[in-house]
Amino acid sequence: MIFPFFQFGLFVKLFALILILFYFIFVVVCYRQIMLMNQVLNSKIAPIIKTLALFQTIAVAVLFFLAVFLA
Amino acid sequence: MNGAIVSVKKRKLYNSPMPRIRVDHIEPDASPKEAAPPASPTEASPTDKQLRSQTGTSFLAAFSAFPKNIFFAGREEGEDILLLLRAHPITTLPWILVTLGLILTPIIIFPLFAAANILPFVGVGSALIFTLLWYLATFTDAFINFLYWYFNVYIVTNERVVDLDWYSIIYRKVSSCQISKIQDVSTVQAGVFAGIFDFGNVVIQTAAEFPNFEFTAVPHPQLVAKKIQELMQEEEPE
Image (cartoon, each protein chain N blue to C red):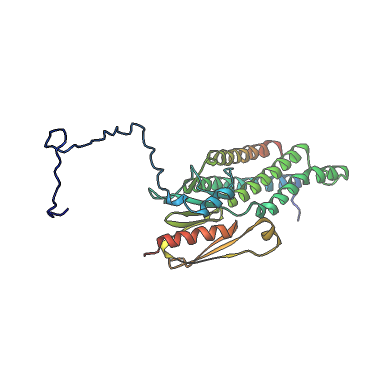
């Protein structure tokens, strides 16, 4: 039985939001592990790696909010 | 003369009973003596010269001899890092090619989808979000692969060998073994690429908790093994 209010686009949007949410959790875990690894092995490139990890985390967070309003 | 009695022929010279004594006045050497170069047993052997000639200058080098400004957890005071090794850069080629493919895919596939009117219900906003998600995921994949290569290091110091392994995001292992507990060092170089680019495995058998250390796909494995054997000889009690 098909619900009358069912919309395929809404289903796709909901799926994308859940996917981006899990992606955000993943990059947060990555960020934490990168901080720990930089404590284990520290070198000149450590600040660059930290910056890229932070950029990645922020970018996924922004993507989530864009997906809420644009998709 | 040890107290022996020696007859001395006395001669009167210039009516003086005292013998003539010649004293040569020697001026002290005023020139500063050059300081002897400090002894550096870690840089004295020909192997060290070979290591220096092969070392990479970039901070992303896979083979770095006597690196500066490197710190690893557990490093003791007075412990010098002699070698910092990673897998040869050629081993990163597969994921680099995959990343390039992922970057080019939206550029090729999405216009084809639009031209063929596939998925007509997908609006502009959704297409933008999906494209951003694709490229962010590609960046994450490339970044994680780079970090796996960068943080999987093998360190040889004047006291021990250290193996830092980062198997996955949540699984890493740090192993170390004193040079004095190393029993055998061998190298394995197999394959065409290994021969062309001179990389291979260095297998270290130890009497420690972890019986084997394996440096995987490191550049110049024979040179690494030679240096470790030199360190073993220095540690051997005479």
